[in-house]
Length: 187
Image (cartoon, rainbow, N blue to C red):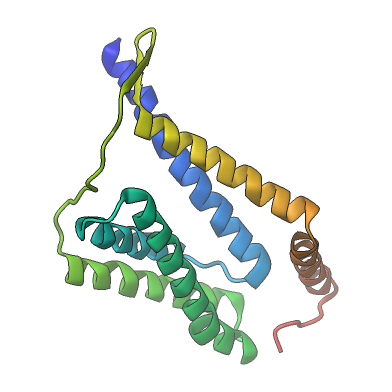
């Protein structure tokens, strides 16, 4: 029974991280109209940026901010200098998927070439152990799950109740309407 409960705890933490990734992936697709398969590679580069900062003796939460900055800059670079030029040329969507797959390979194997192929872990205090019946999580794990939920809620509020969110929804809706009417919007 204990192994089952530990598996549920690990599953909750993994689901929290993957849910954030899914929100980012779908949000990027809605805004840029690119099925960016390199999104996972961007997350790997960002995670290694956080790891490098953390190994330099910096607090894990500041290292997480470094990961956010690295991921944002890398995504901006890919969209500006890789995907957008292909879109301007009127490249078919499947070709952009192939380009993003190529970028995935470059990012993943480039990171592996620089950082090495071994498993690494962050240096951080896990905090006290919290127990509810036979369900056990650390304070750090509860913080990760909570932070993921808060971030997804903030993204929802941004998209639903701000001018930026309204503009993002309008852009996605205009693209879908144009595509359904056979109008090209990639020029």
